[in-house]
Length: 600
Image 1 (cartoon, rainbow, N blue to C red):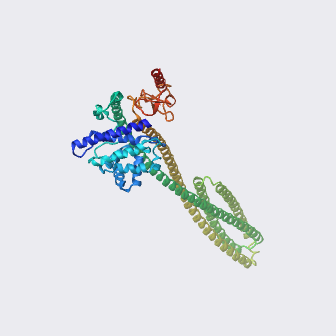
Image 2: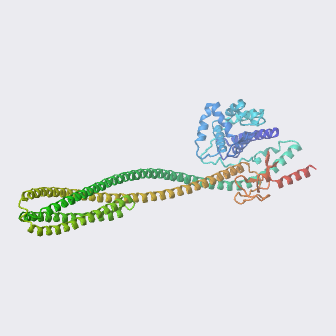
């Protein structure tokens, strides 16, 4: 470190001396193309980088002299204009380029020595950036500040817009300082000059190699930046698409919930309606059963009345003339009763037809309602019973007609004996007329009741049609639900595929970032032979293991080939590097053998 400080201080003296002499000889303001001025900035950059600490982060290592120069803005408010103008320059993308631009602006303001003096006076702040044995932390720093005061005489006119300060290679050109060889005395000085010439030739060769490698690395960096920008655009588009798909999925979920609620409500309403209709149907069936039981009772009563009449006719056989009139009246009554019986038969047949139609329609519309079918079958049995009872009544009427004919034959014989009982028979006939009128009223009421039943049956038909339409609507809703579920499954598949694509893109971005970090490290620290490209090497040269994210690529600073971390963990000091650098195992053994041979 002491030798490096001394060499840098001597180079700073020579560069300032040559710069002042050339400026006085020209007698005009200096521009950026002036060679001594360029070499002064290169030497100044080396002085500021001497002993600079390396800051490690998750991205990689960062070693830039722009960090300590930013402290000048806090310590000296006058330097705020330089810092803001440097940050606002769009051409500068690295901290090294910003540091070079800061030096250009400070020299144009003729306050470079003042700003560096403020930094050296506050060494407790510089300790965060420099090691204790660095040039800026020792006395040589104050000597260099004193030398820089002489540059306030110069007028510099430097343009920062057209120059590429990020990619410049800071190599000292020793040919400018070889004019004063005659002034040096002694053999030691001549030996030092020959060493400097050899080092100059070696450095020129290194510069040629470095210019080629820097061009290749710059093209790679541009390509990677373009790919990163494209990937970022694709990521933004994918994220927007995912957000839109999530919103659509949320809307579909809400619609599904609404459809489910509506279908559940409609199903509940239909269930309630079916229950109410079943209750009404049962009540109507009970009413019909009660009605038929009443009819059956009335028929039994009529049978009893007819039996009584037959008995009275057998007792009153002797009354001929009066009995003829009575029998004519009876014939009329029987004819009317037959007409009523025929009407009852027709009505019963109509009821049968209606019941059959209802039975068939109930089977087609409501096959699942077995209770209705059972009720209909029971109703048919009752109607059959009523028909059998009517047939029995007809047989009894025929029997009564036969008895009436016999009674007529007997009446002719007993006309003389029945003279005194005509008045009693007329009274009985009046009573029979009253009974017939009451029976006609009951038949009318039964007709009205049957009409009401027919209306109720029509209402049940209408309700069954409504239920069918509602069932069809429910089936349509089920189909829509299935289609929505299929669409939901397809959307979920699309979301999963896009998530996988995003994961792959994230991995690709992380790999590209790692490659960018490797290229930046190589661009900062590359000072050896022409290196092998990263794309050409997929396996370690020594152990032949495949590279991955965990097994990263490392260049050997001596041979330029790519190895893994285990095969290139050694470090040695090379002629072109002031500090020990990474070397592969083969180069490590060869260099150790050379050192041992030279030492012997």
